[in-house]
Amino acid sequence: MGECNCWKRAYVLLLLGTATVITSPAQTFTTLHSFDYTDGQAPYGLVQGTNGDLYGTTYSGGAKDDGTVFKITPTGILTMLYSFCSAYPCQDGAEPGTGLVQANNGDFYGTTQNGGADGYGTVFKITPSGTLTTLHSFDGTDGANPYAGPVQASNGDFFGTTQNGGTNNKGTVFKITPSGTLTTLHSFDGTDGELPYAKLVQVTDGNLYGTTQAGGANGVGTVFKITPSGALKTLYSFCSQSDCTDGELPSAGLIQAANGDLYGTTAYGGSGSDGTVFKITLGGGLTTLHSFDGTDGANPNGGSLIHATDGGLYGTTAYGGTDTTGCGGIGCGTVFKITPSGTLTILYSFCSQNGCTDGDYPVAGLLQDTNGHFYGTTAMGGANGYGTVFGLSVGLGPFVQTQPVSGKAGAAVRILGTKLTGATSVKFNGTAAVFKVVSGSLITTTVPAGATTGEVKVKTPRGTLNSNVDFRVKR
Image (tube, rainbow, N blue to C red; front, side):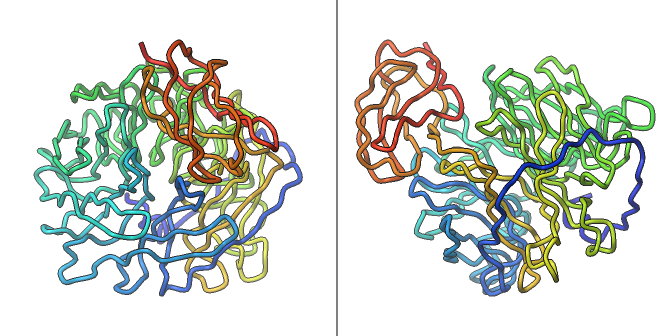
C-alpha cells in the first residue's frame, strides 16, 4: 500500500456525482527543472532554506540510483548535494521518501526508506552545503522503512513515523534528538492504525497529530493524536460511513488552519471514489469538504495541504484533471485550491504540454515561498521523463515566515523573507524587537518583552511584509 505501488496500481476512473468546482483564475506555470536521472529521479517535496534556496530529495536516481538531496534556486538553477548509497552496503541510507525539514540549527533533517546499518532505513542530517551524517539506523524492532520526514517540535526534538516495524510490525511513532538519540513512543497494533505513512504535525495544544494509511476500526486508516511523551488516541477511523463516502487510505499528513481545525486528504473513497478533502476538529469530529471525481483530480495521495496567505488551502492530486491525453487517459494530476468551507478550484492540470514536458504524477505537496509563489515537484514527466520542479504564480504577494512559530520572550527567532536588505523595523504584534539583517532572505531576532500573540511585521524599503501565520507568544 506504499506510494510507489500507486505508480503501478491499476486505476479505474469513476465519474460519480457533481464536483463543486469553479474556474481557475489567471496564473503562470513554469517548469524550473527536468531531472535527467544523473541528478535524481522522482523528486518529492521542497522546503525553503534560510538562504532563500529550495531544498528537496529524489527517491531514486543519482550516482547509485538510490536517491539524492538537491537544492534549487527559485529561478531554476539546480545543484545536487548528495547521492545516497555512496558506499556499499548503503549504510548512509537509500531511497529518501519525503523531503526535508530545516532545523533551528540550520541543518536539514530527513529519512531514507531503506538502507542504513540494518537495511530498514535511516534518519539523517545534512548541512546546506551537502555534508551528510547518519543519525540513526532502524533495526526493525524500533521501526522500519520511514517514508515521511521528521518534524521538529517546540522542545527542539524531532518526531516521525515508520511505516513498518515496531513491536507488532505495523509501524511506529518515534522521537529523536538533534544528536541522534531515538526513542520509540508507540508501536501500532492494527486496531489503533497501521502503516503510518505521512508527516506528523504539532498543533497549538502541544500534541502531535497524524494519519495511518491502514488499520483502525474499518481497516482503511485513521487520524490519531499523540502526546510528546507517547500517549496515543485514535480520533477517527475512515470508512465509518456507508460506501466510504468519508474517504479511505489517508496517505497525506495534516495541517492546522487559522480556525484551529485540522485539514487533510484521503487517497480513495468519497462519493466519487477518487479521494476526499476533509476537516477534523481536535476532538475528532470529521466533515468531508470535497469528493474528487476524476475531472477535478483524483487520488490526492501524498504531501500535506498548505494554508496559503490568501486563506485558501492548496494541494495536488496524483491523477485526474482536465487533460486526459496522457497517463492512460485518466489524467496526469492537478494543482488545486480549496476554501476552508469546501469550494474547489483547479489551478493546473498536468501533461498540458506535448509529451508531458510540464511533468506528471505530482504526488508531493506544495510550498509557498516567501516571494508569494508556489513550488512543487512531479515524480514523472518533464523533458527527460524523470520528474520536474515547477513554479506556479497565482498573484499572491511576498510575506515573511518565522522559525519557529511560537516562543517565550527572549527566545531566538529566524525570519525568512525575500528582499529583506535594508529592513528598518521588526514588530511582534506591534511590539518592536531588536533584530539583525543577516542577508536578503534572513533576519535574526528575539521575542521582545511584552509581546503578545499576533502577526510579525517587517518594514523594508519596498513596504511592510506580514507573517503568514500569527506568532504565538508563550508565557
